[in-house]
Length: 165
Image 1: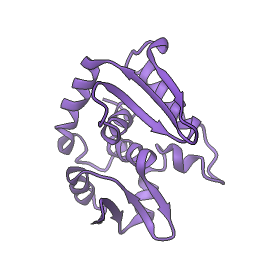
Image 2: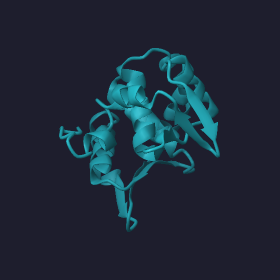
Image 3: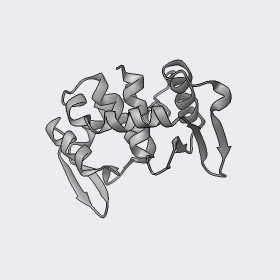
């Protein structure tokens, strides 16, 4: 286990609706690049097996690997044990969730989270409130500082230049 694998677990948790593919649909080339880099370097996926589609305003990157998908699913079943500490593993996991479906604006930070992930955030000290299927984080600035080292979205905001990979 390393932060890149935890990031991929967050990507998978955000996009696990696909039946047999490991998917990441995003609007940023940097997110697609990170997904591909982790898949190739950390998970051993052949680059030719990764499919990237341009969907207009968004891009979709995915690959099919049922064995890996089952492994990611079984690992996510134990996520409350894996992400029980405020460390780089949990920061990377929640950075991926934020990158895939989070929003930071005037009203704070919100994400689409499962009840289980919301509970993990609470245990990590991030107070959450769920409204209309979105999880709002009360201590948003603290959360943003927590995930910033691993988040592509935060890294590509003006004034936050750093290498995402």
